Amino acid sequence: LYMSRGTTAAEGIRKLAGLRMALELYRQEHKGFPAAYERVLEAGNLEAVPELKLKWHFKTAKVRTVPSFKINDTGGWAYVGNSADPQFGLVYIDCSHKDEKARPWSEF
Image (cartoon, rainbow, N blue to C red; front, side):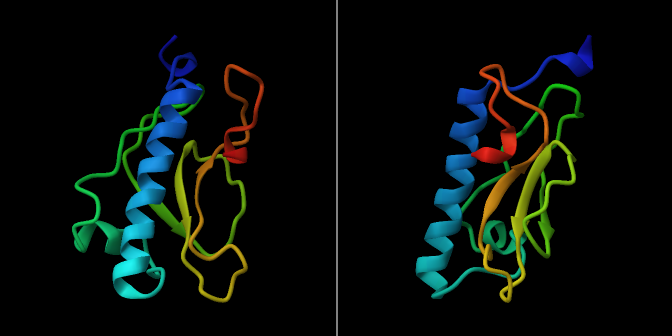
């Protein structure tokens, strides 16, 4: 039962928007995206990474820095930290499952 419950789409999208807003503030202040999302926290643009608990995944409150946009189905937050990648600076939900409205989580 624990693994089947989780964050609603509205809550997940709201939290993702907060992560993206903090990243944008960092980008404006530092004239570019960081190589790792942790820099956003270190710079004080975000107090803490919000908790994400998706159905069929464990709860997490970390942003994993990855080299490119790829769905590995971790059920957590991911950030493309490779400046050579066309998706550099993208924060996304790394999940191949669908939300309660049948939309893939990674679509947001």
